[in-house]
Image (cartoon, rainbow, N blue to C red; front, side, top):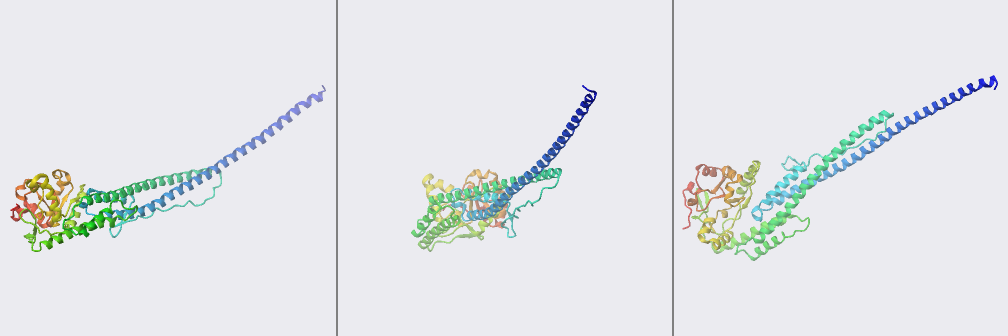
Length: 430
């Protein structure tokens, strides 16, 4: 090989190496650009996904808010309806008297679950509606770092919306559960009224028209139509019973127009074994007695006690049925210890209520002990105290309260004696 040829080969090698380096540099720069483009694209996609997720979460939150607002309005209407139903019936006209109190408690729970407020008129009112939110349209920011930062912020906002949705849905579930409980107790109350009405004995002297009206009212309670207004059904049952009792007493009054009137001693109406009421006397619990019981029951509830009326007014005819039935079971002497003869029952005065359990155990329960210590403050006395059977003529009845008015009841309570001892009268059959 010539000397010139041998010199040319190194130059050619250097040119090849230089070209390779240039090509590698071009490829490297291109790869860097692709990598940077890939990062930018990834940030753009992350922002878009975070924006879409936020909008979806916001939509879920708004749907839950709209449902809650609607359910609160429904709950307020259901609360009002439950209160009307409970007020439409005397607990004494129910087979299970406590169901009326249970319904009122369930209505209160529904109001709490729906966050109902108290309006200026003292009635439940809707709270402020849960506001719907909007995610404003916003273009993706420029630059990869800005997009990544914005995507992180959107993800945090999405988490907040999701937590809002969870809280709203929990309240929705609570309202639905409380509303279902109210509806169940409403139907249970109607069922209880039907059961009691089905076995209620009407006065024998009541007119056939009154008896037929009562039977129709009780039948209407058996299977009310779905969505039926229960208030008129319960009021019809209550009013039909009152009409039958009034019919019977009117007939009794016509048969005995010259019967002796009731006895008052020191302005106090007396019905005991010595003093009787005429057969036509009485037409229900007096308004004063009902108002006093409601006030006492409300204060007792605030102290954790549940008081309800298990028996209220009883007519002459109703007492006759009770007494005669007991005589058939235990004889006259036994019946006279446990209940009154017709005309001699305090229940006929409209001033007497039996509370809760008609049993001596009530006197040892916390509810009964609260009543014994506080009833006089509302105008009631425990009419037949323990150890006073020889005075009152009756065994201890811690459940039996007589309304006298606050001043007189307090005076009797402070005397430590019975009403007979307070007035200086007797209680024994002649």
